[in-house]
Structure formats: C-alpha cells, structure tokens
Image 1 (cartoon, rainbow over the protein chains, first blue to last red):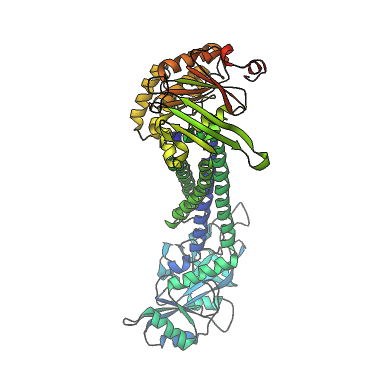
Image 2 (cartoon, rainbow over the protein chains, first blue to last red; image 1 turned 180 degrees about the horizontal axis):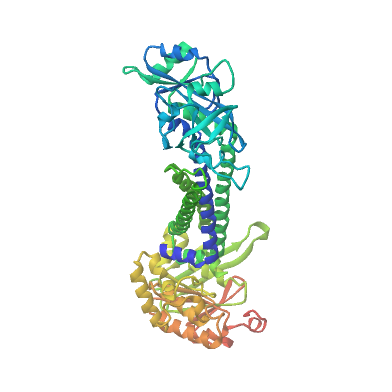
Length: 383
Length: 252
C-alpha cells in the first residue's frame, strides 16, 4: 500500500511540489539561520581561541566579555605572580585607540600589547614579517583582512590601496610603522586589531593610571586550573577563568546584550511556523481532495492502521525530501557567502534540530490528516 | 434457486435505519426483509431517497443499521468488531461505484490490484493478477493507462476487474451504468453477468437504469424505506415498476 500512498501523493503535482517547497523553505530557514547564529556566536570567542596560550585569563571582575576593557592596577601582575601554584604570569594590554592612516583616514581600532620578552598572546599566524619584528622601533602588526578593508587607504579613489608593510600610521597621535601582517579568525566585533608590545601599547594608549587589561597565567604542575583560579580570585579579587569559561561568558553576554538570539530566534520560529502552516494546510487539503479515494480504500477493506501507515509514508516522504533540499540549500548558502564574511557554522546539532523541526511540521500535518482519514465514513463512497 | 437457511448469501431481517436524531430523524429503512441467494444477481430499484443506497451500505458493512439483522454468508456484520468487519469486507466483498472511484494517479493495473494489496499480497503478484483480470474484462492492452486516459466504459471495466480480483463472495454495485451511455452500459452489465456472476458469488446492484433490468435474476422494488415487492425471473421494466414510479420521474 505504500507505493499507492506515494503515487497518490506524487500524482497530485501541485500539492506535492507545494509541500516540498514549504518544507524545504522551512528547513532552509531553520538550518541556515541557526548556522549563521552559531557562526556569529562562535565569533565572539575567536580572539580567545586564537590566543590559547595560557591556562587562565585573569582580569577585572567587572569586565563582562573579552572586549570589555576594564583596566587593572599594574601591581596586579606581581600579586598574581606571587600566588602559589602560578608557574608564570604575563601581562596583556587591550584597548581602543584612534588610528590615522597615511592618507588621513581615521578609524577606531583595538590595540593589543604583548609582553616584549615572551611575545605571549600574539597573532596566530604571521603572513608578512615574523613575531620578533614586533620588537623593532615603533612596530605594529596589522591584520591582512583589515589592511584591505577598515585599514585601507581610501580617501582618494585614485590612490586607494591596502595598508602595507612599511607604512607609517598614527596611533593616538604617536607614530607607528607597519612591521608585519597576520591572519586571524574573524571576530564578532568589526574594529581592526593591531598588535604591538605591551610598553608601547601603554605609551600609545589612553593616558590612565591603570594599564593592564589581562594577565595570562600558566599553572604549575600539581595544582588544578580550577584550584588556581579560585586561589587567584580569593587573593586578588580578580576574575580568573579558563579560555573556554571566558569564551562562554563573552558569548552569553553578547548574545544577551545584542539581542541576536531573539532576532535569529524569531526567524527560526518563523521557519517552524511556515513549515507547520505550509505542510499542515497543504497536506490537509491533499487529504480533503482525496477523501473519496481514502473512503474507497476504507470501504474496500483497508484497515485504519494501514491508512495511518499510508499517511505516515506520505508525510515522511515529503518531509525527507523537503528537509534534504532545505539543508542542502543552507549548506550551499553557507559555502557561497562564506567568502564575503558570512558567519556560518553548522555543527552536527543544527541538522538534528532542523530534522526535529521538520518532524514536528510533518507530525502536525500528519496528525490532523490522520484524524480526518480515520473519521472518514466509508459509506460516503455511495453518495 | 430456492433460498434455504443453508444457502442464503444475504439475509436481512427487519433492518431499520434512521438518519438524524429526535424530531428531525428520518427513516431510511423501515424494517427491510430481504434474502439474496448465492449466484444470484439482485437489483435494488426505486425512486431517489427510497433507501436503496442505505440498504446496500448496510449489506456491504460500511453502515450500521439501528436495529434488525443483516447477515452476509452467515456473518452478522453489525455484530462484528470494526476491525473484523473491515477485514471481512477486504476479503469477501467487491465494490463497483457509479463514479468508478479509481485512483487517478494509478494505472489500470495498479487500480485493479488494490484489493490484493489490501489483503497483503506482494506488489508484483498483485499487478500480474490485475493484468490477467484486465485481460478478462477486455482491457489487456490498457493495463498501463491512467483512468484519465480511458473512456467511462473502460474505467468501469477496470472497476469491475478491481471488484473481482480477490474473488469475493459478494459484489455490490452502486449505479454501475448511470454514468455510461446505453451501449456501454449494456456491455458492462453483460460483463458483470458473464464474468462476475458465478455459483458461489452474488451481485447486488442498485440502479435507476431501467435499461438494465433485464440482466437481473430478481428485482427488489423499494419505496419509502421498504421493499414493496420482489419480482423473480428475467424481468422487463414494465413488469417491475409501479405506475407512479415509472411516470413520476423517480428513476431519473
């Protein structure tokens, strides 16, 4: 009877295609938007993942995410270094600065200052130059992606070009020279990031009494990271989180404050609603149009169980095709637009969630239709 | 054939059926008594609303009567569980409908194979059997045609093949010729008599079509929910119908 069910369904071309189109669109919307949301969410921790050199990130406990720069007293570094269980602790500066490019383009930029001796916390991959070039006079590193975008010399279209090695820029009115370019994972925030040494960064950064943004801490063998974190917090009052804890905190804060969860949630919800309505209404109409045929089958001895099975086969068939097309479409969208910076990340959970949503749509469509089929009076075949 | 307790195909006793409730209820059947013998072609005739379709629905086990008893080959369908009754219909009853009720997206062979598939036969076997059956009804060359590609007469022959394929004991036909022209209707009836009717199989045909009365073994004349009279033998319309039915448009 399954092939009869499928031929009944496929034979009604308009409804069959409408069902697939509705479910495909729902599946596309759900999986694509969920993937973009995941992509953006993960971008909130890009810098932390790229700077995965220490066991703990120590920072002012008022800082709520990785780009919330609450500077600490310089003495904090020595206090942390003095805590038993700390193998080493290195300073890291991060703050906003104003950069003026050679053509006069002014742009707000994030500047990261690394300990000049160890250069710990530097960019993940150098493109031009080497890490030690950061120790050269007035040296800064720029991101190759930024060089052609936010840090592009673009005031005069005729002479527009990317910022490049050897260019002199002004950082908060202090001259700096581009000594290297690097590649990093795209971040949630869009301001360009330049690297320099810690001392130069504090010199060029805003003139405030406090000059320490982060302390990167390595634990000694024999103490757990959790124990050390608790100890640092107890002794200094500073927050001490592992990279993944800090990443999670940053992600949750950004999701909450920017409202992206609500925005994407609404779109994903709309996807489910579209799926429910499209599948439910179209499939119910299909059943209504085939009432006489189902009644005929019932009169001829088809059991309720078999009729349910037929409806199940029909919804499952369109559900699978719709889901597959939608998921494929989402993947293609991701591939096509990743080059232009679309945040797209599809972990295995998303296809699973998409499948669950389509199952929900099909279950809804199937249930209302099954009720209709089961309540059919076979006697209508003679009317 | 003389009906006895042992060889009665359908036995209806005091079958009553009403539609609606309370003061708005309408009697469709007012105590029907009717016997149909095995191997007999019984026609139910009468004006619109006289209860023919209700009676055939009760006989076929797709409608419950309010009271009375109706047995089909000894089985009281009304007393059966829904599930058993559905299974009984699947194995013992074939249906031919006025509007053919073929599934439009299935080929003739697929349509004709449905009763076998309902009874759990393998698809290949069912389709092969359907082809044989279509050949018997003269449609051996149209097995892969869709209903929309066939004439009304051909569609009805597919429906007859479908009604016969699982070798049921009873075939119920609802106005099998009313959607067909005279010539095609005659051919369909000839086919029903020649192919469908056999010693251990009965046909009950509801019809308005006086042109086919000649094919009946017996004709039960119904009016107002009652069987007014049952005529035996090879009858012609004039012998069967009361004057007011014949002239009053009740057959239309």
